[in-house]
Image: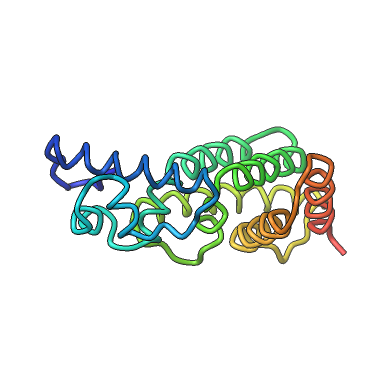
Length: 189
């Protein structure tokens, strides 16, 4: 995805970029989150310089692969922030985010990272944080959520929960247990 003010990619450059993204998605789907750019270039049939022109490092490539999911998460958070039941909306948002993170290797890493390689990722995380912050404030005002939590805390907690679940088999029962533990920990003390 190009930023505002950027010139559109030439057709061959756009094809190469999409090929690199496809290979990166395949690598992640196969369980390889190393995303070594030299390997990606070889598998995509492009020069390593081509990969680096589009993605200056592993983090930029990971963010590009996760961009659509991050956008969906930001949209869900914005919708949840205006929902009728803040606590129920928060729980559903956390379930959605955790499910995404478990199904898409690398997504939790992008979500929990305090910085970003790409301006689009920064903007999407800001959208998510603003909406989640509004949702947290509403749930706090209703007495359901502790007042000391911030959106960045929730992003880190989601990353930690994802990591804990990925340490071994994570059947639906265990995912439900961990999600319940996470949501219970948000209550005021």
